[in-house]
Amino acid sequence: MGSMRTLAIALVSVVAACSSNGNRSPDGGGGAGGDGGGSCASSVSAAPGLVVTDRGPVQGTPSNGTWAWFAIPYAAPPVGALRWQAPEPPACWSQPIAATTFGSACVQLDSDGKTVIGAEDCLTMNVWAPSSATPSSALPVLFFVHGGGNVQGSASENRNGVFLYDGSLLAAQTNAVVVTINYRLGPLGWLAHSSFADAGNYGTLDQLAALAFVQRNVAAFGGDPTHVLLFGESAGAVNVCALLASPLAKGLFSAALMESGACTAQTSAAASSFADGFAQKVGCTSGDVAACLRALDANTVELAFPETANIAAPTQDDFQPNADGMVLTDSPQQVLLAGTHNHVPFIVGSNANETGQAIVAAYPSGMTMAQYQAAVLAYTSGNQTFTNAILAQYPVSDYGNDPRAAYIALTSDSKFICTARYVTRAAATHQSEPVRRYFYTHHLDGTPLVALAMAEGAFHGQELLPLFRHMSIAGYTPSAGETTLSDAMDGYWSRFAATGDPNGGGAATWPLYDATSDAVLELDDTSQAGAGVRTAQCDFWDTSLGR
Image (tube, rainbow, N blue to C red; front, side, top):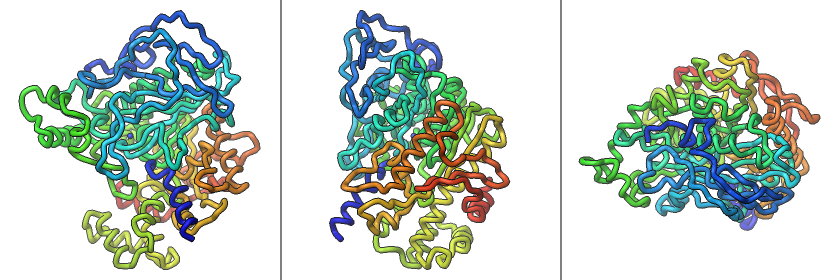
């Protein structure tokens, strides 16, 4: 049993970290569709695996039936005077970069919550294209934004020797171009101090710069810049919604998909207040505060307010997008409700047991009734009236008399499942472009099957394993049904990128969203259309949260 438990921990920990100058142009140059500071001359000619971008040539490497290009600079290193500035174009290079290994993750805390890892020179992207792709192929593009609470994570996320977001298998399976990126995290990505020329949102600006780089260059890799699916998971989904709401992102993507995220942002005032406290904490309170902050070493910056991703916590707002009036004119939720977002085909989804992994890890032997009640009271920040209402809505008798299962359900509903319904409804009400919803319910059912994985259920980020085709890890063998699920998801995602409609290929029909029926596609070994996900519980949360 010990070895099986170790296997389960290894398997599910693959996604543990997935649980976001005065010139405001996203590419640091002439706007979203600009030339990124002017094209760079190169005498190098394109060849198989050798692509000439508008900044310089990059030499890829073969990988699982694709060409892979790693660590392509899409912006200048945001160091020195460029720290806490909008991204600038990278310097030109004339000879091919050997784009054969992942670049550095952006500065963040390691999983121990104490050790600073990564580098500030981190603004790179990775591209995978089918080996047969040419500049005239015009393949759909799958542009992925990683999760990690906007404080952790990277495009090179590695668990048990597996690069979770390696896009080679996905690109080969779907005949599409796959792009993943790094973007600034934590205080380096989101600190909105009034002494800076920009009011935070550097992580969002990085994503805008990467999308603009794709618009200018993806055709050279075989992609179609008019068919770009922007998708992300967890904080990556939060960032997708921010880009959906940002006027600066108009025209940079043709469809959007959120996996287990929300449409949230801080107010400008809250972000500014936090930044003032940050500056005070690190001793930058007078004189040239911006210069003082830029002179700090990265460790000092990162450790001033150390924060790691925690999907089971009620909120995590210190390092997130803020409504600065330019990148975001309002919170993304309000922008969707006003109908002033970028109208593109849109999909929103969540998993059935989002917090299962985190809560099972915190309570490996289960929860007592007293622990359940205490946890709910902490979740409401000590509001006993609200706590009593939640406990009445989530009696343990509805969950096999298992307090831990009830706590997983209520936290998954409040943070993810019911939020997905709310976001989907808002978008469907205020745009004519098609909106759809999914509900991922799959429990691992390959071999060996272990109790730990079953207890965690369809946990946060689990859908990334079949999507990126990385289920055969840590000695786990996916079931035939899981292979079918992987094929189905890849088909849905790639058709959505190509046409704005995920349907086709003999897969179950994915219905358009209808608020009355709460139409949804359930993703499992056998996917099927359904209606009504946790309806009573979501009605409760909408009422309780005033939405």
